[in-house]
Length: 139
Image (cartoon, rainbow, N blue to C red; front, side, top):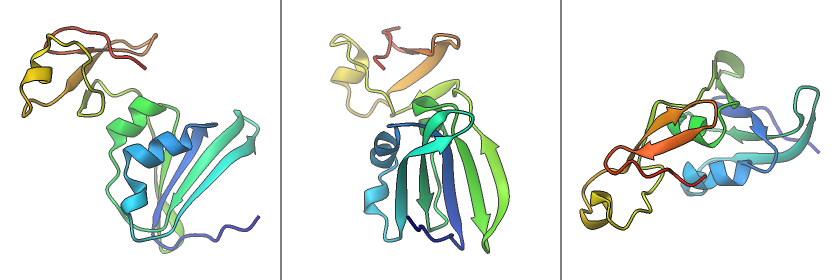
């Protein structure tokens, strides 16, 4: 398999095997007018298997979404075919409009303009709760 290097863009590395399509959908990568490569089930010394996403364009990536989906992701920024920045993600303290509150009594269900905001309440167990009604997010 041959996947070309990218001139300017982003490489999302160390994605848990099988999570790349979820990230593809959350980041709306299908709407981009550039090359996007999804490499699934790559052998990894560290992880056993992993996924990789290569985006051949300099776009803004929502790091909170990535950190929520898979906090182990490494974000590599490429300029002129050289690695210029590497970010290691962690679970974000809050996520906005990534998770939807499922509580039918929550204000976010009845008021359409209110953002869905969830706060990290238990880092060890990756538990997020709605800031309005305290409902636990479904993962």
